[in-house]
Image (cartoon, rainbow, N blue to C red; front, side):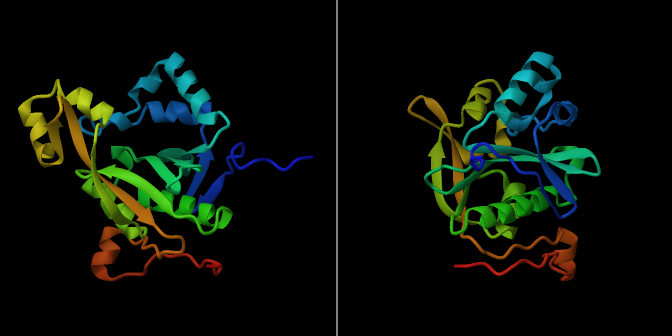
Length: 228
């Protein structure tokens, strides 16, 4: 029997108190009940999954074979975060859709979730860099990425369709918190973003903010040596 292609296989991953599972109908129902952030983070909100037709469509897309793997992080049976990776991006292993709802913030879910994913991918695809893009106003997310060994490789302006469409409708007061991160150029709204990169084997700091302030244990788990 032929060996399964990495494009077709989405392995379950465990570590840091989490289980990263492929999407399924039970987990989608939990995602539909998550709290929402609203503008300018509304593109991550999942309230539309309360519509059964849209939930079914999203589940089909997130479980279809291809170069993307889509995970939901589960802690004690509860869906607490989600993330995706493109295995075939020219820039590297491209992480995207990193999302923890407001009710699960403050417990290091994003940091732990990405650490589990990065370790598994490093073992499966040795020698490949990790890449992700984040709008420059997402400072809380950036703390997570820096702690996991990412650095800012590039700053660019681009058209974020979800944000640009909403910018036409929000008030000046709603726009004010991100005013330094947006511009209107050539008849369209643009958003400033960072491109983050991480070399394989870069150390990760999984301590909580409280532990870091107190100088506590790093929270790292022993790992097998890597070939460089």
